Amino acid sequence: MKIMIIGAGEVGFNVANRLAHENKNVVIIDKDPEAVRRISETLDVQVLEGSGSSPVVLEEAGIRETEIVLAVTDSDETNLVACLSADLISPATRKLARIRNVDFDHFHQALRDGAPHIDTVINPEIEVVKTIHLLMAVPGAVDVTELVDGRMKFIGIQLEKGARLAGARLSALSSLVKKGSLLIAAIIRQGALIIPTGKDTLEPGDLIYFICEDRKLTEALQLFDKAEDPVNRVLIVGGGRIGLRLAKLLEDQSIYTKIIEKDHGRCIHLADQLNKAVVLNGDGSDQELLMEENIKEMDAVITLTNDEETNILSSLLAKQMGARKTITKIRKLSYIPLLPTIGIDQVVSPRLSAVNSIFRHIRRGKVLAAKSIKGEQAEILEAIALETSDIVGNPLMKIAFPTGAIVIGICRKDGTFLIPSGDSVIEPGDRIIILADRRVIPKVEKILTVKLEFF
View 1 (spheres, rainbow, N blue to C red):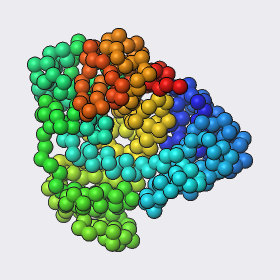
View 2: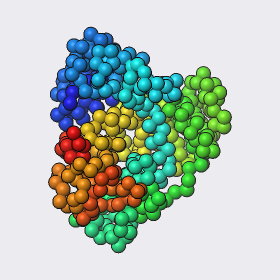
View 3: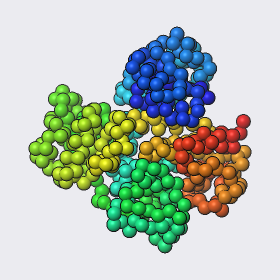
View 4: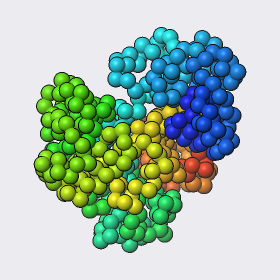
């Protein structure tokens, strides 16, 4: 598979990095010499300096032999023109484009049906708002993924000292957990990924990932001593595109919302766009302002400015002043693993959302969802098992999955959800949830392509 990436920024770099580790054939195009140098010195991929919207550059890069082109520059216009140029030269090449401008929200289908025939339009800001909403709804979660159209949840929870599961051996959980109600799928301990067995023990400070049905989520959270009142009062710091999208969503749900925005002109625009939210002109890291706005009465403070340091400082300050929950937007993906050490656990990233959306659409096989988990050490995949597959009709214990990959959930065609055991049998049409170490993703892809798809 040859993949062409237009744009060597944070998104392009991280996609290329993961694909390079999977031994994919990758070529990156960027007109910034410094970005090109960074890629060429760091990754084992082909790099071309030039404009990805130029037909001449695309020809030189081999667009006619490319299966997928990803237009992920910071400019919507450049991404659109790049896809148009690619469509003119190589109509068979699949095209994915990052387009963030809200003005295009209602034209995604038109961009697919007509020129430039973009197969997938990715708006990471929409995905970030969905993630924030999920984090607000799941008490104590530092990571939330919806699967099987929202019927299943994959949750990351930090195990605190004194929690009843602290020190528990997984083989002994049957006395606390009803059979089939949840499965602990992964543990992140001191930055290292553990795919647990019954012999493993849960320790305070572990980041524990589990999967369960949505209707059993409250019961599962209680097991981890995570129970909070619903979020009714929210303060948003930063009134940019994401802040406005989130405020509109919260208004629709009748959640009391305030927005703090530095730019006076932007405040006027926000006030025109919103019906109920209170818009304040000020600095979200101003302690006096936060005190005046009764920060300790807020159920959630969500920092969404375009400045990393302001978001981090505002979140830490809000937490210190009594806000119940903080969610922090981060642009630089390299910051994310460091933030828990300073007390920031709930983080969202438009760039990480873009990367996850891209991988969902470029994975081989009948993959419906793909998302990396903390630190990108592993990936969770949702796929459909077809009748032609060797995986169908055999107990899981007899299927040769690569070491480091496990089936953690099965959803039947009738909607029945199963926590699998070694005796579980996958049926045609089932949706299967697979957790895989990043190192074995190519092997999992091979299974999904060769064994789950019929050629």
